[in-house]
Structure formats: structure tokens, C-alpha cells
Image (tube, rainbow, N blue to C red; front, side):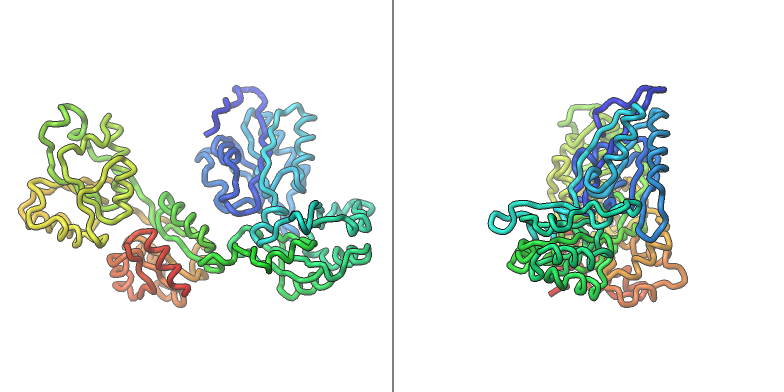
Length: 512
């Protein structure tokens, strides 16, 4: 959250002209994220990263003002009018633009309108696609031996101009790299004008489609042939065209983005939204295109934890001599609830701590607790074996409201008195028609719990398992795999170890 004070009631607001970068969510700046989190209103366009608005306040007003070449157009004058209306109402407004607001983003025009109206504004630069897309394609826009200068040029001038403002002969003679924005449809004219102006016809050139995104494609040819090659490949906007000797460096070993192990793969993530971001981020780092289709939602419960409060010295006898955590969600919610009682990890003094799975153990370590018992396999049966024949006199199991009873029943069979602490429940999360269509088209669907299996099949309705024909199903562990098989589905791969890292490793291994 921004430390800046909000506008005083009744005063004019403030507008932040914020660059969202070229598309990769990891290229959003820290300042951009801070302002998104603090905004009352966000006006955004279609080229912002898919997750750019995830950090917005729940009560923030989100207004789409995007434009598309052949699609609906929102007039620039209307966008400027809306900016002024919100600012005059005392709102903190973020105008979120793909790329950089002052590089072919009309941010300069909007800033002038704001200045004329006496509205305070801030400009937050973003990573511009003219530099980022070539970098992701393995092409440096400058190089000491091949290009000591770079020019950024629009490939799509204002159609209302009486004539082009571009001096093509001067541009053809420019001693460095030429980078054209929004020039796919004009590529034949751009190439012919440059050649006519004296640019070598055999100079390397490249077109980069959807730069920095998982579906990025790069076409490399010569200036004379690049338009034809791009047309043959069906290149579409948004794309960047680069002309210059540096384009050849991609084929000399600098390509890296497409070398990532999951490049070109689409992976659907079905886990709860609050957990999905970590998995989605790791998948994107490995090159995958991620479809977030959360089919469950974690709903915290509010069990009493008064017996953990520091009402007595910590060396007093504890109520339980064993506490078992079955999931990272359970750990997170246990410590959140514990903190509300005025207690912390010291409340576990005198107890053995057991965890099912390495992810649960990591969640405990984040709170300064190292699990005493961690079985080899992330299932309750393995924890029972690891605890031995006489695990405890009294045990507490921190878990979901609806869960397998293997662990409490096995402990009771050993003579242990067992209490179950229900910290949360999972409920079905409906999917939109667009999400369902994207999921059916994915190469992989990941399942991280039995409930993700059950709820996805519920969301698929009458189509059921048949909707997943041809999709490779990735399971986080044996319990999830059992749930798939019980519904007539066979997992193509199963994580080992049974956690997110194991799931990622299994997906990567499946590419070999």
C-alpha cells in the first residue's frame, strides 16, 4: 500500500499515469504495484499484464478504456473526460497503460489535459516493449560493434495527419537499430521505404509477436523478405519490428526465452485463487502460458484457540503432546487465528509437531517452527507410520472441516486421545464460460487436491470427464490421483515429492 496520503475529502484528486510494461507480469515496477494497491479508480487498457489488477483494492472501481485495431474504440477525448471527472471527485486515479505512458502511449496528451485542468499528476515509467520484446527474443537493441544507437518509431501514425511525419531517407541512413511499434499491417510499406531510402535490402530484420508473453513468436529474415515471412507466419498485433545488424545475434546463441522447458505449453491451474499465484508464477518462469481456473475457494472458520493463549508460564504442561498439521492452509490459518489471541509459535512449547508434506513443513518454518515428524510421502498413512506405535497421549489435528479421517482414526486406534481443530473449509468456485473454454483447450490441467477434482467435474456439468479428453492431467499426489481415477480419469503424471515443486518437476520431465 502506498504511504502517500489520500486526497482530502472535497479536494481535487490526483492522477497517476502508470506504465504496466510489455505484458510479462514480472516486469511491473514496484511503484506501479504500490499505486495499483492504493488506487480508488483504475482506468486500464487491453495490453496490461493479465494479473496486473490482482493487487487492486476490493472496493476500487475498475474501468476498461482499451482500444483494439479492428474492435471497439473508446475515443481519446472520452478517456480524458473520465480522468478529469474522477480526479475532480477527489479520487486517486491510476491510468494504467501497457508499456510506457510516454512512449507511443498518449500519456503526454493526457498529462497536458490534466495540467490545463489544474489536476496534479505523476508519471510512472514502464518497461517499453520496443526494448523488452527484442530482449526476450535474444536481440539487444544496442551492441558496441553492431549498433551504437537505437531509434523508436511508430509504425502506425495518426490517420488524420495530412502526410507522414517520418523522414524515410533520414531514417534509412540512421546508423543504428530501428524499432517500429504497431507496424504489422504497414510492414510492406515500411520495408520498401527503407530499401528505397538506401537501407541494405539484406540487412537482418525481425518481427516479434506478443513479446515477453508465453505465446511469443519471433520471425527473423532480411529487410527485403521480412514482410513476406511475417505474412506467411500469420503474425498479428501486438508486434514489434526491428531492423538492424543486431537481429542476427538471436541466431548466434542469444535466444533464451523459447529455451525454457515449458515454453509453448498451456497449463491450467485449478487450485484456490489465494494459493494459485505461487504455482502460476513458477509455471510462467518455466515458460508456460497459465490459465487460472480456480475451482475451489478456502473459507476460514473461527475455532476458539483460547487454550493456546499465554495465560500461564510456557513451561507449564501443554494440553496436547502432539499437534499435526495437514496442509499449508491449515498452518496459515492456525497462526493467523493464534495471533488474534495474543499468542505466537511459543504456544506450541512442549508439543511434538508433525507435518504432512514438505509444503506444510515449509509453511511451519516460515513461522519459526521446525516439524519434528515429516513422513517420506505426503499422505496421512505415511504420517501414521512415522509417528510409531505409541505416538502421543493427547493429539490435536489442525485441518479442513471436511477431510479424510485416516489420521484421527489411526491415532485413536493407538490409544491416543484426539481433538480435531477445523480451521477452514473448501467450497466450489464457479467458472465462467471463458475459463471453461480455456481449460478445455489447455495442454495440461493441474490438480492439487481431491477437492479440485470433484469441483472441476461439477463445473463441467453434463460433459463431465469427457471434456478433458486429450488434456494431460497432472496430479500432486496419490490421494488426488485416487480422486481422478474414481471419476474415470487417469493422471498422466504424479508429483514426487507431493508438493508444488514436485508437480513442476513432473511437468518438466514430461517434455523429455
